[in-house]
Length: 212
Image 1: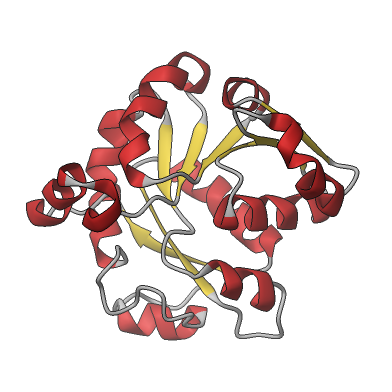
Image 2: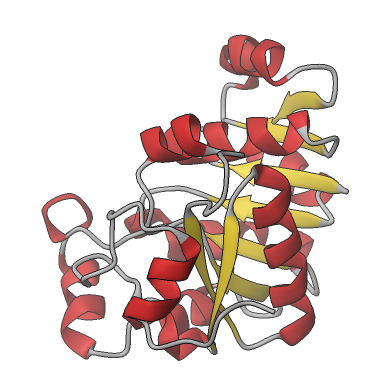
């Protein structure tokens, strides 16, 4: 699968590298793609670099891992390249960094999912990889079962299925929580956020049935 990475920092760089090592074609992106040379070399032969626009065009799936305050602008700028594509988003609203828009999201009680969907109209949005620290992703991928759980929320069943497969390819346990409005159950500030829980423990904490 071809995967574009918008935001090649701690989360995007880590997860993108895991996907490249799993055999996916991954394009990391930056406004200065030449600065990604080291990341591309570490990710291996299936990795390349480009601009955010190039990565959005390249990917059958696009993983957006950027500061939350940048999501509306990026959604507008890249929307023409994201129509109908599965878009995984890992952004978290931190008022101290992202300002009033983050406070609005947190105070709404609706969770992040509906907001992200409104900023990426026409894309098949999945909330993913927002609740686990990047060092946990680096150090615990492909560990012996029970693997670290990655909660997912989406209004698109096929997009959810694609995201779950990619979570597995990266070396984690996909925990399907439900529709996008249920992303609030694993957003920043919830009891499961940044815990590194295993998949079974996460399902128990969120009152979900065990994976088949």
